[in-house]
Image (tube, rainbow, N blue to C red; front, side, top):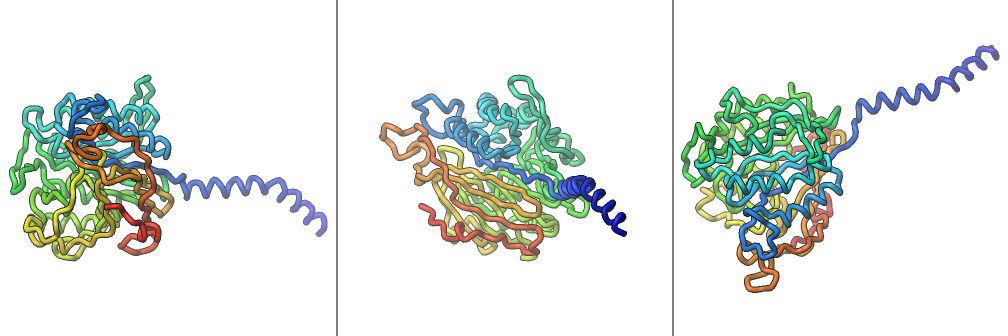
Amino acid sequence: MVIVLMTFARFFRKAAPLFVLFMLLGQATLWAEPWKFGVMGDTQWTTADPAGENPSTVPVSIIEQINRQFMKAGVKFVIQVGDLSDDGREVSEEVRLEAARPLIDAGIGFFAFRGNHEARSADNGYGAPGFRKRYPQTRDGAFETRSGRRYVIGSNFSSPVQVSRELDGLSYSFDCGEGKERTRFVIIDNWPVPGRVVPNTTHYPSGYTIADQQPWISARLDRSKRGAPHAFVFSHQPLIGQNHQDTLFSGRADEHPDWQNAFFSSLHSNGIRLFICGHDHLHQRAIIHSPDGKSQVEQLIAASVSSKFYTPKPATHPGWRGQKNREISISQELSAVGYYIVTIDGPKVTVDYYADDHGGWQSDAAYPQGVGRPDTGRTPTFHFVLKERWSYTLDDGEFFPRVSPKALTEQFRN
């Protein structure tokens, strides 16, 4: 008996390191590394440029400062929510691409999509051909640095080509991360393309609408098949905005309720917690309900990365068509330049909103601090600070996001 015990003890001493290694490897397959991605709002330069730092209506002087923050944070990639320049000309879109090169050279992917400023003119095909040429990564995730190094970010790329080949790389979806951190991204482009221009009640025509693309959207979000615990949905236009009264649904907030109900249901039933958009140049979080009241999602309108800032229209404004009762506001900040870092850590998602600690910037011709000042039209050096942090976990079974006490007590300047 003693000999047996001694033999077992010697075996255990030798086997224990292997056993621990086996357990660690097994755990690693279940819990991949947490990872981060960044979100950047509209990038438009809308005033004089005495310093010559913002060519072709692109706010390079602002973008460069935020790029450095993304590199410092170690994000895997950045998504910009449209309106890549103010005038949408091809030369301007080239300038915007060059402003993203430092990210790409640092091994950080850059994914973009069109906004209304890209799609403003039939003269360049509503910006669609040029966009596809500049951003082939929306179809395969492949990047190349200026030194010639190549790498790929993301997998399982898809576009609604069954609707139209013209949507290839405009609306797109991809996955990133592994295991419990695997995440699906669905990016929706409903702007005109050369083969399809649909007028509506706003001054922004559409192309292939949400109704046209809904089967693809629903298939990509289907959590029983997508193989990714997390998912986010992006578009340029909000579901319900704060200043602009057009919506993702090709018109005013009360139009196409059947399209809206189907879209909201596809998000809600598939566990989508966060819909991210731009267009309004302010930071706004809100819970938005579908017209039929059966579905809901949190909407994040991304803060401005521009010399342009908007202020909200009153909820009683007739342009909202009585739809503001479908919105529950969580937080808001105006007239500040900001960006977002999203961390995926197992079932938990944390969103950090950073903005300059000054805020209160003036808009357009008065940027940044008023007309007639020596610094008019010159971007200040920003000092970015954490303004708000919120999180949710897929395990909690709750729809409404948990907001940290810091976020609840944060006193915004505007």
